[in-house]
Length: 228
Image 1 (cartoon, rainbow, N blue to C red):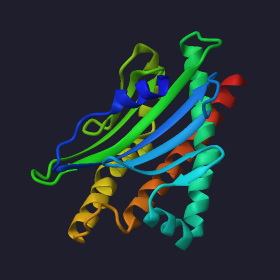
Image 2: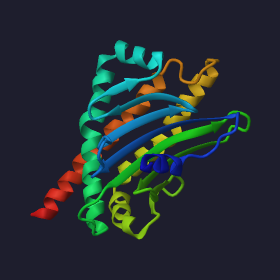
Image 3: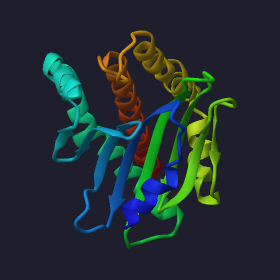
Image 4: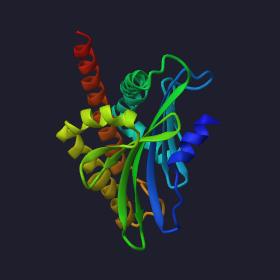
């Protein structure tokens, strides 16, 4: 039930002319019979792929073909699902529990990012948001290139992440140019189904993993330094 609440928290309706790409990252602590980390990718209402720390479940044939044709891509995604992203989410959940004065109990952290494009109006927008324990927590401001704390407990992360201008610019690129390119490439090619080739989407997944992997390393280094 908690998972459904979190998933619905970020969902919003889209018209027949609007297409969207959403990638959900969910980390948890203290939950029984639930993976401590998982990623779910969706194109419109179609599930692209799912993974946790143990499995990678590809839902579409062209995604499977992309992995078969590019073994390095599969290893990259495998690293994202099994190592780098779980480490990042585990670290952030631990820091949030400290900030909330929580010593035990079950807790969840979710990141959802992506973009949507209205075919009729050409209106496009990217989005990136974090939720903690079923409530909105942090949101990325594309125009202001900064993080917005949606709860007072998120201020410490906002202040920390706002100091990394390179990371802020990367998120802007990821959620605008790259994500728009993924939509535009598929539409211009005249494919009946979005992302039929998957080329730009492969770049999108790689960029997300690189970003989170290096952020995880930076956060771990900061944590180590603060403990000295």
